[in-house]
Image (cartoon, rainbow, N blue to C red):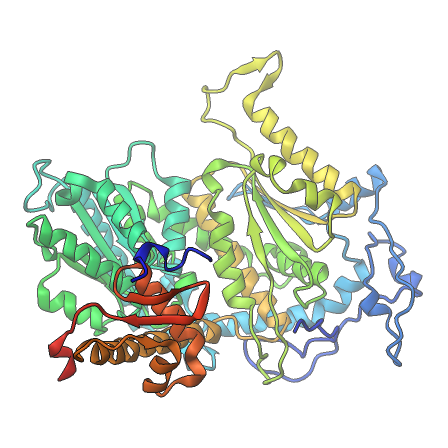
Length: 620
């Protein structure tokens, strides 16, 4: 018999059509004329503005022939750039936030022609905040803006729900931190750890905020189980050690049926049983009312339950109980986070494009990517505590903008790819390619002006601090990229505080909504994610059939090892033979299937059986 360890020892691209997106809105509306990018021969439109490279796609004639690409470099005259910087710099004095779009080469004419579309987008956002059905696929309102300003909720019932939830989680977190609410079996006499179990928006926002804002010595330290990787789950539980007895477990799932979150919960409950602990007395559920998770927590008597609202999506849930409870338990001022988000929302309600920071971001995204996602957005925060901001934005932007169809049912394959690292680590990673390689991106720099708390800075050498080097790297990278016609946006905040982080979250939430309106897609659903979940379910259903077939063969006398073709035939799934092979290889690597003959390197040679007969399964 072949040994288990040796089983796996061996181990159409479509170019997007450049066409003008249909008129955009969160709600469908009548047609609005679309601003056409200047063609290479039309120089008049570049007279008083920064020029940019014009893609060869735009130079296509009606007959399909491609004219010679004309590349116009960005404005490099320092005085002209300084005037442009002053003309387009956005500042929010109360938040200490600045937005510099001067190194993006949109023209004045382009801005003017986009104006009707932006006005339509502003109107759509206004209707959204009033409670319009902005997610037509699911018939839902989209109300994450109400979370930081409950008075804007469309009815008193929702307003009271929001206010009561905030009051309840503030009281609960305060009682936990103060020791009034205690774990039943901990020698410490108080909760010392938080273990947050959730995935996607239920993890990325809380992780970002924890990394950005948690104090050096928080009242409760936080860990995350955000995947269904057994080794990752084991690692987090092992790291808790004896502190499992003083760990508050927060389980976050809107539906209560997310498989990865359910699996994490079951694994944690197993660890509690093995340690002789009562999970219910240390468990908290954040979920929709009357969901499977909510009912389970109620029946089992969990320590607390907090609501997730139908009108808040996972990727915009950071300022709901999903993000606020974990933050409050770490000693983060969540009222300040909400205040920052509210102030930013107010700024983004103006219909004057130059004074609306979210609209300025959307304008830059549209210009840089031709409204088609033709370039990636590289996010480079020059602050260690903001490292996870790019991961947070990956979901917020890509899950919102990456859509196959627009609101009119046209196949558009929209998207905006986001990735990033941190400065100045990026200087030693991929800036080389950004500066000299393929020009398929634009950059967003995130700058933090204050290096250390007042009175804590010192000079490494005369006149130069450690933070000066970081500042120099940011400005140098920005200049080096721009000198080679690489466009960039710079978002600056004075400090990383709960207020500035709340403002950043609100800024990008609104920018996504406005941009989605410009390209006429629904930013608030995720059919591709649902398709992946459905396909995963089909794989697991097939695995159960494979196990049933192998069990029947293993219960025969003598045992009947089966080839892949025989397994597929008995599963009535000959078209799924490749997946059956992968299922068997995975189970064999985990000692759940035995290979009688063959190896992974030669799938046709494999013969498999279970190793033991499960009689009960024969009659189940």
